[in-house]
Length: 289
Ligand code: GTP
Image (cartoon, rainbow, N blue to C red; front, side, top):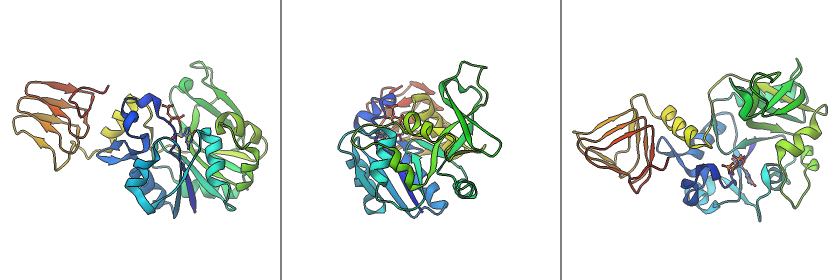
């Protein structure tokens, strides 16, 4: 099966890191985010990964080479335009995944759910406590989507499941996406499919959108081994106190420094006596956030 991964956004919320590194290549537990995502897709039988690229595709291509296929947009086409541009030639059911979500979603079960209902498009849903930051998806008992409620006021939403950024799509859906301009799949395509073959399936597993500074730090701490992760090329002085953190390649932590629940990006130095807590530290030795 083929997956189209949306990997072309500028990642403005993760600036300044995304000024130089596209979001899919930012390290999560010392490996590019996309490596984690591709491992998950492959585990569910995805044998072709087509990356819908736009912003800074070269860094992605240089790392993955011929393992992936790349379609680069001439200008940003938005989530819907990117799907259409990357998948226009496909004639079989395919998966779409946002290139900033890390999850253990049972993708095989989502595809089965889609096929059982003869759906045209099926969204994975994820339950949240406070849906007011998100678009809420309302479904009937059989999973048919009946409404979208954008960023509802707390306590007013009729359901608390949000779009989890993974879809199963029939190729005829692409006919609904106009060519040559930016199109949002969420705002312009989903509404056309309500009552016309759009389904959604909720699951409770692990789900993390890495797109904000807080969630980027959280994803790193969730993906490191228990106790922490130190790259073999890093030097942590025996007199330093490093707990529950990710220490990247060529970092240096000096004697007397304390690092906890933090990420030290490649080359970061924490000098003697300094305390770093709940931070992402850049290679210049200063907190990024
Ligand atoms: P922010 O600027 O911080 O909102 O991040 P973003 O640019 O990644 O936007 P957002 O988080 O809304 O995007 C969700 C997913 O769609 C991400 O995986 C993006 O890479 C991807 N995406 C967003 N816009 C485009 C686009 O125009 N083209 C492509 N190919 N992908 C896109």
